[in-house]
Image (cartoon, rainbow, N blue to C red; front, side, top):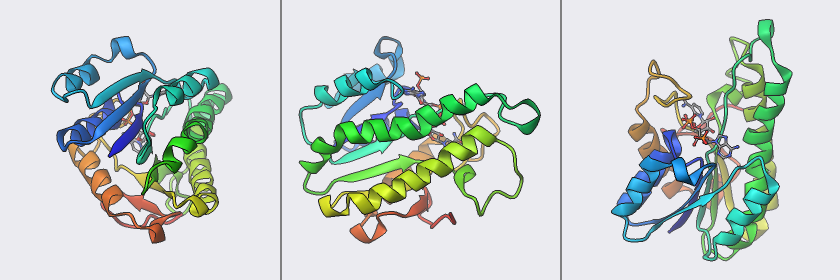
Length: 228
Ligand SMILES: NC(=O)c1ccc[n+]([C@@H]2O[C@H](COP(=O)([O-])OP(=O)(O)OC[C@H]3O[C@@H](n4cnc5c(N)ncnc54)[C@H](OP(=O)(O)O)[C@@H]3O)[C@@H](O)[C@H]2O)c1
């Protein structure tokens, strides 16, 4: 499979790239700064030319356009993984600039990349889009409040993904939102409950098993439906 992963230089994106390369897939990795993506580059050495690293800042139209034009093959799977969770996100210290930037990356960034790659997805016999959301985007599961900009961004991503699922059904593109668990990455922190390898393996298993009936679903890395 030809797989595009954004934010593939660290965290969940890096581990997804590692596991897909290990099983023989080709990975087109989008990163903000290719020159400082050492851990990702190291994966390329053993991949027999199946790892392609390109600059892609999901906030920038020109960067996303040039990323998409560098991918001349069809795309079987787009994983919109790049995301931010910025500081000052509580009611007492809310920074609205940060909230706006979070929306730019986590919502508009996903749409920007998806729109740019639609032609390449349409050339795949079985195309899929997996948008990495968060349980923090669930309205039903918000029993504690707080984390405004991030929660709002993931809830908006969920809505955008649901619309994409409807709009892309005619192209047979399966679109889902996935939650990776609370993962030990820079974002999740060392107190998180899920190892990055387990999260990525779970996500890959869920993506492998997707059928057209799953399009529009909100699914955890353990394969369970998440309440909206
Ligand atoms: N970790 C968790 O517990 C958890 C839980 C729920 C959901 N998630 C979601 O899972 C995804 C991955 O999270 P993670 O834990 O792996 O986070 P992470 O370790 O902080 O990595 C985030 C990745 O996103 C990239 N990124 C940020 N802004 C970008 C931009 N403008 N353009 C392109 N790439 C950009 C980063 O690149 P740079 O290195 O250049 O900054 C980095 O590669 C995110 O969507 C996150 O919201 C994570």
